[in-house]
Image 1 (spheres, rainbow, N blue to C red):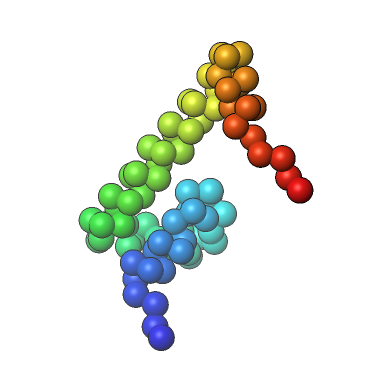
Image 2: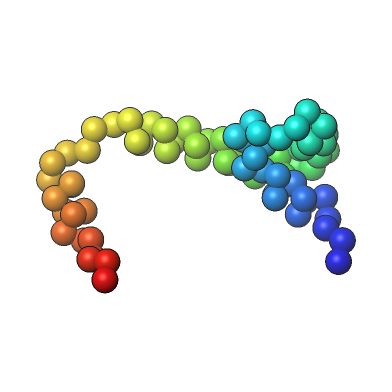
Length: 77
């Protein structure tokens, strides 16, 4: 079964965002993103999600919230 360009782009999305693709793979991904609005929208979503996670991870967590989250943990058996 042959992979469609969007399936291939989806598979390459995280490595592209992580900047670990080869130069030719990066060029291929950029070409597809320039021509495919669906994948470009998906890419913009992933960029915004990563930005949100970075901000959320850098904000200190209130002690009360830490306690509530700790109470939700289930022990590993």
